[in-house]
Image (cartoon, rainbow, N blue to C red; front, side):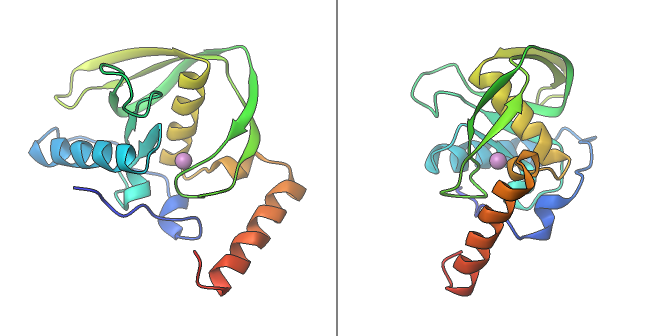
Length: 169
Ligand code: NI
């Protein structure tokens, strides 16, 4: 099932999410729906708060479904190690049609759990590291525009307010 993706301005996107403690069918169903929603968008990552669920769950596929075996579903993800730096253009399904350059680690190690509650460690570099950092940010109520300089951020916010007034957001 494709779920509606919340857009910037919805207060749920600025909340700190709760850790998942129950690994049940409902969690599996949520992950499945998030994957479908991400692929339909299409996007390379999605965090539960973007579909109105304030739980620490992310799905990531840097090929956006183009290559099999690239899908990662991670519960309670935590960046436990990071190195290097990248400074690339970034977007977000909750802030459609806007991008900005964000500084991210070049390489990350992320710990978390799979949908059955088993410990899982994932490494990522380049785009994958960036997506992990972006999605973990979502779980803490942080959006990519929060990393931009004040001027760039205000320009985007102003354009969004204009779209809201025009009924286009
Ligand atoms: Ni995002």
